[in-house]
Structure formats: C-alpha cells, structure tokens
Amino acid sequence: MPPVQAKAAAAYPDVTFVLAPMGMHLFLWEAIVACQDHPNVFVDTSQAFPFDIQTFVREVGIERVCYGSDVPYQSPVVEQAKLRVIGLDERELRAALRDNAARLWGID
Image 1 (spheres, rainbow, N blue to C red):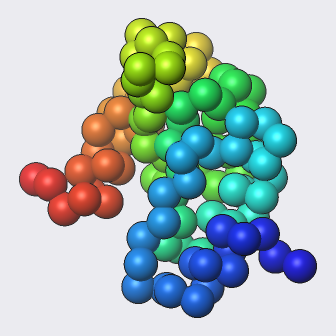
Image 2: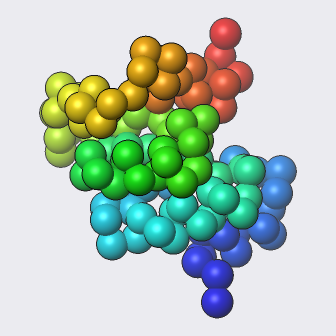
C-alpha cells in the first residue's frame, strides 16, 4: 500500500503538496518514495536530522527541498546549520533556503 502522501499526490496531480516536516526519521523513506513517484510533492527540512536531509537529497535531489524553520519550536539558526553541515554547495544551499520555495509559490 502506498504512503498516504503518495495517494493524495496521485489523486490530485495538479495540487502541490509540501510534507512538513519531511519525516522526522520515522517516515523519511515514505517521503522519499512519495517524491520519487510524484513531481507535485516537496518536503521541508524542519526537525529533520542532518543525515536524513542528506539522504533525501541523494535519493531525490535538492529541487524538492525547502528550508523549514519550525519556529517557535526550533531555532532558525539550528535548522539552517543542518543544511550547512551536510556538504551542500552554494547553488544547492541557495535552492533549499530560497529558490525552491520561490519557485513553488510563484515568487520572483
């Protein structure tokens, strides 16, 4: 049986889904599979472990990752640091922190 997210994405292919958070380790692979199978699914990085973000980027790509601060429950400094320690280059970091969300929401 496919994950709930994948069922929703398949049923509504013209709707963009953002899995927030991306899975908090327990559901990481469900998020990965949902994104691999459905181009209308994105994730945010809030509360994800750095290793999980790195695994997601390796399996799916940076184009589906949006920074999530999880304020007020987490510090934006901590959440941004997770992206900085996993070895993203400047283009990937800019994509996760800004460009992907701007594209997703239609902001220039």
